[in-house]
Image (tube, rainbow, N blue to C red; front, side):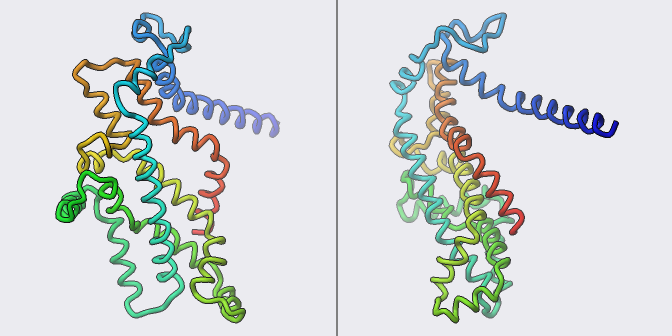
Length: 277
């Protein structure tokens, strides 16, 4: 009796997960399906989920109408540039706040965390004016510079560093290991799950960022994928749903593939960072 109840509960849970998964996947499947249809197949009385014959001409036409290859390159440069600098700044800041003692440490850490309390949109005007003063508008640097430091990343990594026993650091010092060597060879490897978790958050966040790149750029040469997609929708010829879905699939596909390839690592990193933090 107990076994049957457990089996029913487990079957019910699996059924709920299947329904939720279907609801989640259905929109993207529709996007992909529509991107491979002919224009006359988009709006029909009977929905056609599996297009046949497949029309890849939509993707070729999409690249002819807008330089999406350039948008992709700009997005990769911006996202990796932000992440690369962030990993340096949050690691050094977290190390100082977690392992060093100095006057006013808690107060300065509180000031550092105010970045998390202030809405990001409230910083757009001063950041824009600063970039304009230094003649950096309409450049890739303009899209990256305001995000080189991260209060959230510093907080997350500080918590991970604080979990590492002091005795381990004392033993490293006795063996002749200096501060930076201890950071590089001991702290960073032990905090690897937290770094991976933060990297995922940063990559997804800045890959999908729309408003800030829209504010600081106005030429195709430096536009990212999200801005390019927005401009593609606003064409004077009106919305061609097959081309629009092809562009949407192209913009979202890299992140989807990235997750499918590394999904096990993603889950492990978030779980371990949660336990350690």
